[in-house]
Length: 250
Image 1 (cartoon, rainbow, N blue to C red):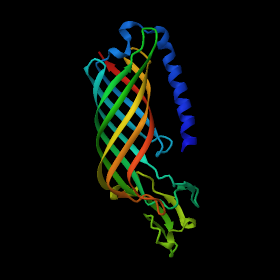
Image 2 (image 1 turned 180 degrees about the vertical axis):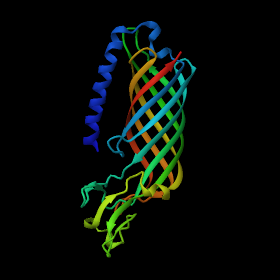
Image 3 (image 1 turned 180 degrees about the horizontal axis):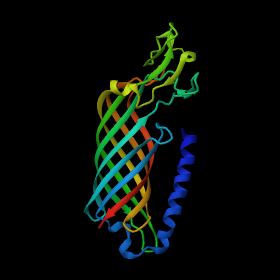
Image 4 (image 1 turned 90 degrees about the horizontal axis):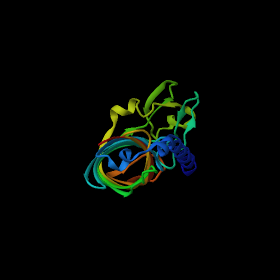
């Protein structure tokens, strides 16, 4: 995962610098990003237990005193087990050998954001510290595969390691996270907390681009079986980077 994450970080950093460069030259005192009273930010999450894109999030912040904000944070992420190894099925589609369930987390947080560094008039980088916590709603979604049974019929069912008809060489495809397994999803509850640092760049007037990086911890009410031979977990710790775009109010 680290090999996949570092190129993403580099490309995102380059993109932010390119977009924010005009702001460095045009920024004035009344455009300073530390003057905002409210912010609504949309983000893309990249984390150590996700795929190419780990998830999406939204943050709504309001200033409560100078250099301090309260915020509401909502995030939807797909968690992958470290032992997952996607392969090509016999008909050319993808499937993951040994996968039993998907795990999707919906995080709802309340927190605080503190400004650590305010930019000068001729600069455009602001550094904030964020801490938040709240409820995690987990969706345990069965992993459905299409396979050929002993009667040579194609059957779509949840992967079962005890079923010999579901040998890897008999699987045609997986149904996908939004496929048939979604209607059989189980809902679990838990709690989560995060601590992070955000680097904010002016993009255009009343808008900002930025990178946020830190640690997220989720604790669920029970262990979730994700893989046939994997270690089942109840606690998930992930390092993340979020690329966000925010709209600020004065």
